[in-house]
Image (cartoon, rainbow, N blue to C red; front, side, top):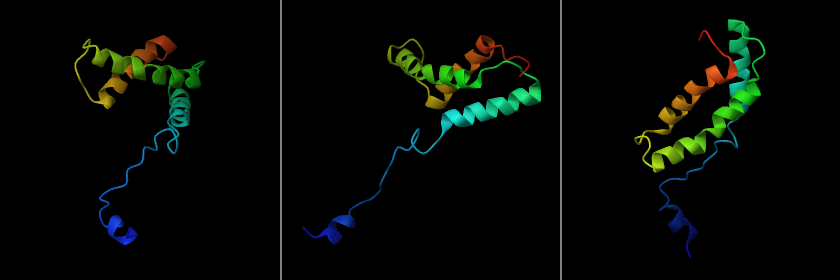
Length: 94
């Protein structure tokens, strides 16, 4: 097989790096801590906040799959999950 001929047929290389290269959890914790300092939010466990947000991922996708909620993009699902968390974690005044 001629390798140079095969490489000319490649149109794209795609890699899923989320969670491998992207430190989403650390970013959420760090941003939460900075927000907490600016808004005088004391006692918020930002690591638990980040984990609780992530734990809502599969259940929100399942709700779409079961037809309980309409199809929407992942950003909208993440946003809906995020909107549930402030009350649960005592984060007010945002």
